[in-house]
Length: 619
Image (tube, rainbow, N blue to C red):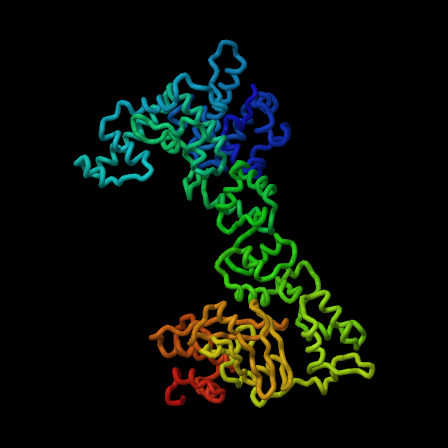
């Protein structure tokens, strides 16, 4: 006998080895004996009773939702009635399986005994199987055939009410006819005449595996696509109804629970990218055929096939950026990351997340890698000049600093020289530069600090942002003033300048008579911003101009929500007290500040627009 146990027990082919092994393993038999060893040999070594017992244990532990005839299709021929039951009592299941195995082994060894046909591979029947199926329905009357064609085996099932109206009977009568029809089909399938169909189903289960596109069922054999003369439906659609234990979900046939198989698939890739050939091998362990594995992986939510790798693909842009970099295995620009993600994420939003998340390391002016790769962080031109001076022992020539930084990073010579000649550095006697002494490098102290500066607000991460209300001058490309308190918070002082980077190019903030920000027109264009909208902006430690876009408030908002909108908060609030708590935190007040303290702070800062919505008389 050349058959292994898995040849006559289709679920063994699609159940994960990790589930089978603890139950079916036997010290007297080799690993995966149910696939590797002929059944007669396994029964000779371990005993037929032991093999039947292992199979019964698997049925109880792993396949409790399947009819016994789907677990061991030969049972449909030896005991058609019990083959329809699901596993209940272990002893009963064992007795049935032991009987089938004993008969199969006897038929293989006793001369002249009629052998029980093995279902895999199916023998070619004397008559085409569609003809055998048509015979099942040949004796039906018009009403029964209509229920079979338009409801039981239809792609789009008509309702009981529609059929009841068509034949002028009650819904319950249609339900009864449908039930009788199904019983009639099951009875015919249990007869010897249906043996070729049972063998085909057993072969089909082994071929399908644990998940397969529904079109593969239609294409499994040529005659699946032929139309049944009695019903006028493709044969495969009838066959589909006999494949109990399979769910049809999103164009797939899935053995057992589709959600469970998807979750098991996702768990295989929680540690990061896996090359596609290896991923195919991994999901094959779940019983998914290698020729459909890639399609299955592409269908599983929160997984993605990216540049020949399977990667976890959760909802957050941070984790997607991490996956893109892990596959690339080298730093990328925010633009490249955006392209590879390929979804509707703004470039500014991606850049902000790369800057704020510790998983990422800025390694050049416009390139980011993963922090776990190590390497030296790009920290802005001024800070890198300080780093170069420290490495040189406290002073260094401007030419060497320029050479080192322009060689390693995408920075211009003119920018490096401009920073080296600005505040915070001083010349030595031989013409080199060093970090200015503390008394010369003290930060500029404005008359009002950032917490007392109009339109400046603190976010939950401690950063201060300044709100710019977009007007026609901004849209035309003109520069605009910044409050001295906010500019000083950025580390600026009179006479200095700060070059910040954006995806659209540099924006220079200079301080002559007052702090002035250069044109942000490209930033506004990226957001498609118009007059009345707002941009909240700040500068990162690495010199990036971080921005957040806020469209103008919808008309008709309650006053308290209008006030919150002006601080950049757009979520609903439960009460005015909660709104005041949020506003107090954003303007730098401690938790628990009173309403009067908040109104006073807003008035002292000059935020009359917010006050107008909180207390018109105070404003």
